[in-house]
Length: 422
Image 1 (cartoon, one colour):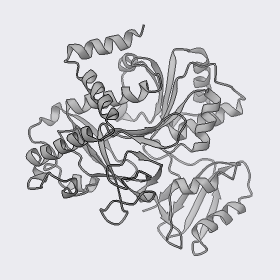
Image 2: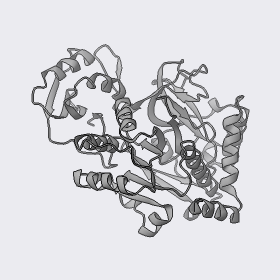
Image 3: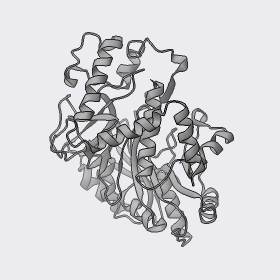
Image 4: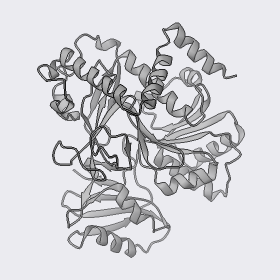
């Protein structure tokens, strides 16, 4: 019997059973093959925004295309107009992020939206057999904004590991802990930290299949398909790529046995728009991921351009998509070859996989337009890497390769495979 799970839902029942109602609602929307229930929620949030949010006054709520596509900068320029004046900001939950774009962005969420986020997380984890209240390891950047008290960590039943200090000593401690503590049922982590960890375990000739892990969940930065396979072999449990952000919540995840991202259409409406104009792309084309949050009434995010790029093979093209074939990185960090072909971090990684001696890399585009790749490598001879980069980007680019001991993380604790220096 899971006492923590029982206690969680007992407390929820005492507060009106709101999380349980959201769980039922999510199940109903996911079971609705017509998409009618999602459409009802979309119409509801659009109408609510036009009636209650100053920024949207005067817009015809009958069609989502009547709403402007928004990004962090637009929200920041219209701070007072995009927030619901009916709410007391001091009583709202807020998120604050600069993300990968470097633009600080603060959003507000009402209590019902927070309950929805809880239900989304429970739905995702339970699909892999992980139950509410079970113990897990959480590897991320535990900066001051996200620092939790030991009491709260105990209450939520997880072990916090700071990715910024996740050295070999910490990896060894975690390795031993996972072998010893059979109550740990999941690892939630940045993709880059998981890659570091599995590489360390391989150097120790370890086999972690004796652990009781039900799930490894990767988020924040990219987890290569090859690394996903290595983790599944090492631990003998499913590995999911979770697509999420601070300002919205869980946007999607990969299911067992596939690399396709199933989008969270129970809580969001998704569009995939052209890189240059606010028009839907065709099926199979790369586009900007634009999301509408169906539940946040304190600060409705309608047609919010996440700054991410993706590809979908949905027959609907770029409107109301339900899945992504792949994520293609951030809009700000996509480069172009001399022939005008877009090169994303995913595209680059398919070429770099052939160099088994490379432990980590980062391709930088400098202010003068030159390209420089920083490489952590087991060998000194890197001329073949330059040849490959010339093949990808064309002879017009001046390309240099530099061997380094390590590549610094971003302030968020994540790694970037492509970085544009501004």
